[in-house]
Amino acid sequence: MFNIFIAWLHSQELPHDNTEWELLARDDLATIECARFNHVKTLKILLYALASRLAVPKLYTAMNRHLVHIITARQTLDIMAHAFTHLAPQDPVLELLVDTWGVMCGERRETLEDEEGWRERVPGVFAWRVTMGVREGRV
Image 1 (cartoon, rainbow, N blue to C red):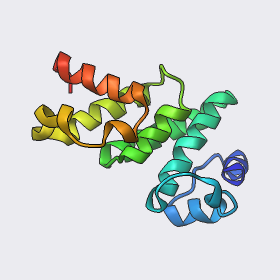
Image 2: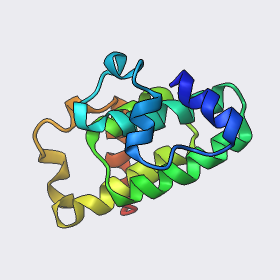
Image 3: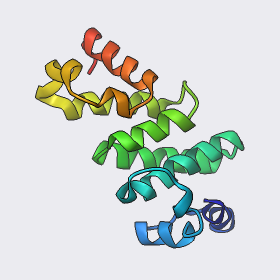
């Protein structure tokens, strides 16, 4: 991830595709704990968290917009777990994840409470926010 950060500092641009992300982060990929097919998305969450922690507003904004785009396209429980672990509790991307999860569940929303295993795969705060969103009718 450090190489991606340095590359962004020089170019002020994010990598253009997953191959470029993987190439820049090849040294970090072995240390990322997530399903193998989600490692690039996890890198993106981690870079977003780094931009927030280091107070790099241009990178933070660029990653925010990029994440909103990929999150609304498709999300997985692994990505949500990493986001809720590494982002600040008030980060707007977390609320977007909760809302998007609700939309993705669609007709299954009424069975969300009974869906086996999903609660154990995500941080408790995500499960709580989803449950509250369902009860309030937001998701």
